Length: 74
Image 1 (tube, rainbow, N blue to C red):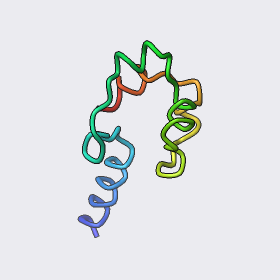
Image 2: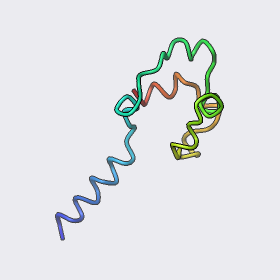
Image 3: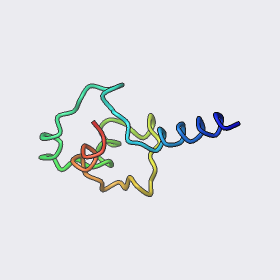
Image 4: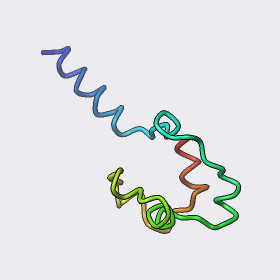
């Protein structure tokens, strides 16, 4: 039972951490997207990110900039 609890805690903490986007995707040019003033809303408009990713909307507002994304995600 102790190990089951420990596994559950590890699984939850791993899901709460920022993911490395480059595991599944090519890295993006953060400088170019920052210059374009890209936001999460821009990602959804140009790349249809919303159909593939479910974001925590309390943390990830549509006006979150690409630079702010890059601060947590690779």
